[in-house]
Length: 258
Image: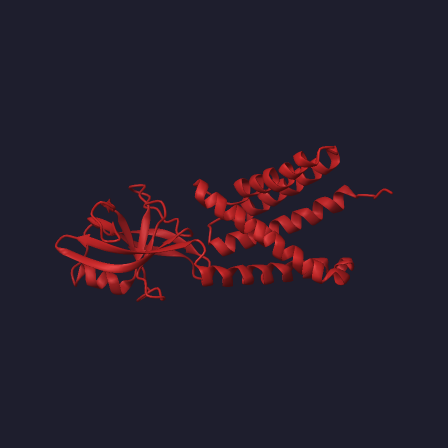
């Protein structure tokens, strides 16, 4: 028994699915990455899949390593900006889970997938279903977030607040190169009072829901994690959000790079 495999069809199908999986990973982990870069990652993933298939490697173990370790790793490295091993592992796990979800959706709708004209529509439907399911899981189990208590110090003032470490926060102050955390407007009013903060400037930001804009950034004296002086970040930069609070009881979004 043998099968005929059309390499062009294999490439197009893998490119579309890899693109969807990278989009789901980007959306769930709230990672900043352009669509052009995601397209590059999907192209590399599809090319490597076709290459490994065409070469015909006889050893199953090597095939498993290539298909399930090398190809996804290259896809992520090329398609999404990941600056630390921890973020890479989170993205890789999310990519695997997305693959299982999308595969399950297609298996359930297998009778319709055979119709070529519906393939693209089913692929888009699987994207929204998989990303919605993973987003719900991330909200339930706070995937990609860690909660803690922080104390902000500025001059004679100090404020305690609930915080999350958000892997989707990649803000940086272009002038100093420092990572920027975000505080709510309510917390900023408590910390700054009615005075005008010194050293205020504006940096650009981009979010999935609100698009692009600029946000005010100021330096403060320190951020103490869990209220401990031994676990503090000196002279950090914080951005002041327009939101009065971020919901769920927290007023600080810590940048993971601090």
